[in-house]
Length: 146
Image (cartoon, rainbow, N blue to C red; front, top):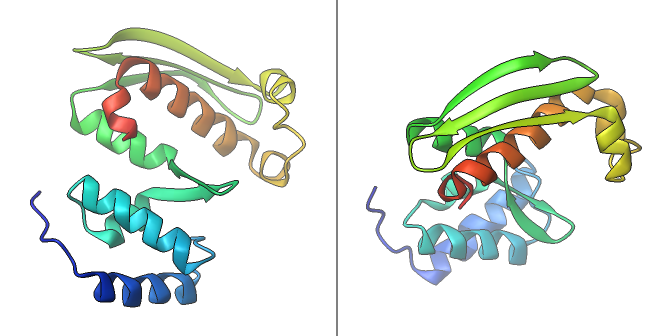
């Protein structure tokens, strides 16, 4: 996609709207502007980058579902072996990056210091799936992670 460069003043207005909408979890105009800088560097529209990234501890991080979408669009495949509130186990394969099996369970999340987080308590399957996807895609197709 070839997106035109958006002038700074228009980006700043969009940044204020993104923050005020509270739709994307962006907490400040500076965070929104940083994401827009990433968007411009990747030749993407700012709304797409706001949809695909979140800010975790002050740093932009691509969402697992966005990684998965870009991974599959680039020829990647995923085979799920298990996915429930206790485990996410999948094999990730890509023609250019090989094949790897990744498993995330609550014991591993606890070891990583994640299991005590509210989201892991409320949505364990989704959180384990996201960790599995992030690691799997980063391993065999880092281009899909930006």
